[in-house]
Length: 500
Ligand SMILES: NC(=O)C1=CN([C@@H]2O[C@H](COP(=O)(O)OP(=O)(O)OC[C@H]3O[C@@H](n4cnc5c(N)ncnc54)[C@H](OP(=O)(O)O)[C@@H]3O)[C@@H](O)[C@H]2O)C=CC1
Ligand SMILES: O=C1O[C@H](COP(=O)(O)O)[C@@H](O)[C@H](O)[C@H]1O
Image 1 (tube, rainbow, N blue to C red):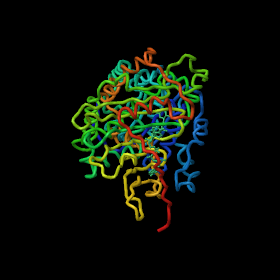
Image 2 (cartoon, rainbow, N blue to C red; image 1 turned 120 degrees about the vertical axis):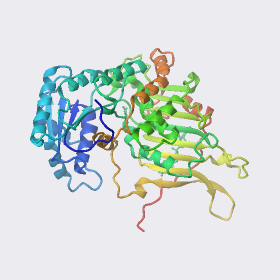
Image 3 (cartoon, protein in one colour; image 1 turned 30 degrees about the vertical axis):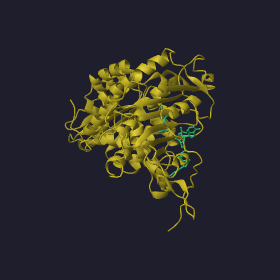
Image 4 (cartoon, helix red, strand yellow; image 1 turned 180 degrees about the vertical axis):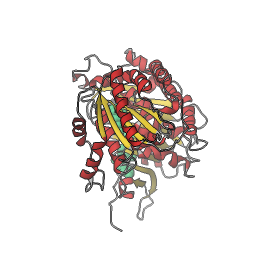
């Protein structure tokens, strides 16, 4: 049975991290829980955290393993040791297999014992299962949760958080969704995409729909092209086995960059209700045309196959640029250039909206570059607008400059929350706005599956590129071919942070 949206935050809360011995759990899930606890979004008197995995460990072994990953946030250095010492005792570890009754029976016993200690009068209990596990074990784990570990109290709930990748293509994803969907109602399933928890991704709705300024401009009359870019300046070190099975399109484009595209391109939702927002995302995805073969460039950095877990003849892309075209009234003719790469020259993620040239140009602006609206998701969050101004002085000369909202400067006192922190809090509050709905996931796979199958069958070849480069040069040529105009000679002078 499902549950009403935005259910009440009452009753003792058990957070169960399955795959507690793994990388994601120690780097992201437990640190996010730590920060939520430190800020008292979850409190010692009504929360308990259970780690579950196959590895044999004591409670203290797990706590000691996590300790080094619990880092202080800006301004919390002084109380950090105390914060850690209050958080770690909340964690208990249970060891067991993912596909057999005994482990989940003892997990349920532990959770129930904790609930009894809190709820002797039979109050509601909340159980949040976070699957920090490879998707291959989602079906058996979900079956075990359903069989042994569901909330047994009146008025409480059971929710399940699942990580990407949700499948490898349309069929496998649908099969996975069906298996999980037979066990849990959609309102109990939280498909996490951590890009939806990033501060500036969450800002997109506000920027677009709370500013009159953008409304008349946000369409094909004014916008020439949109780039959504993800780059990392390191390779797949240590994750070659996983990565080689998936590649950059499944790892980054099909989920993170496509979710960003939805928020950039969708129409205004009827309201901020999660279902209204997700309805609009589905609509814009349904308007994406099939990807053309000549609008894709894939690459693989040199040395990728030196990893012993990667086959020497691997065609798996570590880089991809492709053009998505949205066939609707707003976006007809505007290329959305999605680009992602590992082992690149720099690390950044940004959205770059490039405007068309000024009609009837009296300033010879072509040489100066176009207006661009840039939302830099990371690092150093910023929103800036590149525009042409008169260069100060006696001459009537034009120059590129910018309206600059750098978060580091504008919000000096604010610690920007980690994406996982925000999203886990949403799961506790029952807010599915920033989670991927099943129909959304299905269309996302429909867009990429034909191309992915061609790459898997070696019908599209990955081009080699040097580590620490911009990726294959064909990618820049593709962006240029579809209309992106690079600005040359623009130098940004960072504002100095001065006391008023
Ligand atoms: N608030 C702030 O922090 C602000 C910062 N700045 C900074 O000023 C600098 C310049 O800003 P900006 O112009 O926006 O950004 P960039 O200098 O990063 O580059 C502008 C664009 O040019 C592309 N590009 C770079 N080299 C090539 C190439 N060889 N061929 C084709 N395309 C290329 C980039 O694409 P790709 O992403 O693919 O490399 C990007 O889309 C940046 O360092 C920026 O961070 C500017 C304003 C405000
Ligand atoms: O999901 C993933 O994201 C990370 C990048 O996340 P970010 O928040 O640091 O930008 C990426 O390294 C990884 O390959 C991918 O699986």
